[in-house]
Image (cartoon, rainbow, N blue to C red; front, side, top):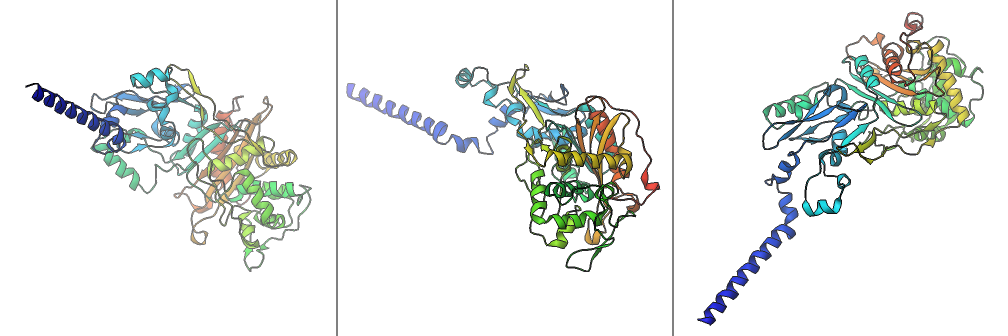
Amino acid sequence: MARYIRHACVFCALLLAALLANATRVQVVQSREYDGNPANRRATIARYQQPRGDILVGGVPVTGSMDTGEQLRYERTYRNGPLYAPVTGFSSQMYGTTFLEHTEDGVLSGTDPMLAPLPLWNDVTRAPNRGGDVVTTLDRRAQEAAYRGLAGRKGAVAAVEPATGRVLALVTSPSYDPAELSGNNEAVAAAWDRLNHDPEKPMLNRAVRQTYPPGSTFKVVTAAAALDAGVVTDLDARTDSPDPYRLPGTTTRLTNEADGCADASVRDAFEWSCNTVFAKLGVDVGVRDMAAMAQAFGFNDTGVRIPFAVSPSTFDTTVDKAQLALSSIGQYNTRATPLQMAMVAAAVADGGRLRPPYLVERTTRHGGETVTGSGARPGRQVMRPATAARLRELMAGVVRDGTGTNAALPGVLVGGKTGTAQHGVGNAGVPYAWFVSWAQPENAPEPQVAVAVVVEDASADRGEISGGGNAAPIAREVMRHGSRAGVGTEAVGPDLRAVRPAAG
C-alpha cells in the first residue's frame, strides 16, 4: 500500500510541477505575446479605470475626465476644444492619441515611472499612479486673439517669446472638437469618418504640420544673408536692380506689384516688398551663403520637436541662379511652417539669437509637485547682433511707413514683414497672405512676442489678398494680448492698399 501512496505522491508532485511550469511559460515566457494580443482587453480596461491627468493653460485645465460608469470608465473631455486642439490633440478610446495627449501620455495616463513617489514600493504593490498634469507655455489671451482673428478662415497663427522660445499661441483654422473622438460608440466612428473626409481638413495642424511658400516674408532671411555676407553695407544706397529683372539664364522677367522698385535701396525695397531687388540680392549672395543662413534659421531641420514633431521647412540647396532668385523671395521650392516663420521673427527680435521653441513648461504629479522642468534648450547665434539690429530697423520701417501699417500699435515698437505667396499651377491659386512680426512695448527692455500669420482664404477675391490687409490685423491682436507688458487698444496708420497696389 505504501508503494502506491508513494507513486500517487510522485504523480501529484509531477502534476504540480507541470502546472507551475505552464504558469511560468504563460506569465513569463509568453507574457508579451498575451499582452499584445488584440483579444486581451485588460490593459485597455486598466488604462481607463482612473481619470487622466490634465493639460493646463495659464494654470487652468483645458481638459478633463468624465466617469461614464462603463467598462472603459473614464472618457476624455475638453474645454474650448477647437481653440486648443492644435496643442492638446485628442485622446480617443478608439483612435489613440495625438500631439500633447500623445507625447505626454506617460504623465497624463499615470504610467510614467517618475510619477511614483516610492518607486520600489510601487513595483511591489503594482498600484497604478494617478495621472499627472502638463503645464503648457501658452498665453490664453494670445491664443484666443489668434483664434478670433482667423474667424474660421483657413490658416494658422504661431507666436513665441523671443528671449526664451516659449510658444505663446498655436492656432489652426478651421478646427474641430477633440471631444467628438473621445469615446468608443458609433457617434465617435461617425465623427472620425466625417472629419477625415472633410475637404477643409479640420484635423490638419496647419501651424506645425503644413508648409507654405513664405513669399516675401522670406526676404527677412535674404536680407540677413546679404548683411552678414557684406553684400549690403548701406541700407539706403541705391542698388543695381532693374525693373523688371530678367532671371539669370532665362527670358523670364520678374516684376513687382509696387511702383518705384527700379534700383531701389534695400530699405525702400524691404518696406515696399520689391521682388526684383531681393531676387537679385539672393543671386549676388550666392546659393552657399543663402542656404547657410536659411539653415541657421531652422530650414531643412528634420528634428524640430516642441515636444511633438514639426514638419521641416525647406530651402533647396541645389538650385541654379534663376531658381535661387525665386527661392530668395520665398517662392520656387522654399516652404515654411508658420512656427518656422515665427522663429525667424523671434531671432531678429532677440539680437540674432534663435531659441528653440517649446510648448511644455513643466509636468507635475496630481498634487502639483514638479516631475520635469522646462523644455527650454540652449539657443544659437543665427546672425551677427549688428545684422539683427539693422533687420529690426528695416522691419520697424515696414510697420511705420510700408506695407505693414495695419499691424501698428500705439505705445509699442512693432516690426513686421508682409508676404503674398503665389502657388498652384501657373500661380493660378489664390495667394496666401503672410505677416511676420515682433512687438516691444515702450516700457519693456526687449521684444516680448514674435508672431507669424498665414491666411489661405479661398473665398476671397484674388485682388484682395495681401499680407498687410489680411494677416497683419490678426498679428496685431495677438501682439496686443501676447505682450506681458500690456499694449495699446487701437491700431494706427492707414490701410495702404488704398494708396499703392498690394505688395508682398
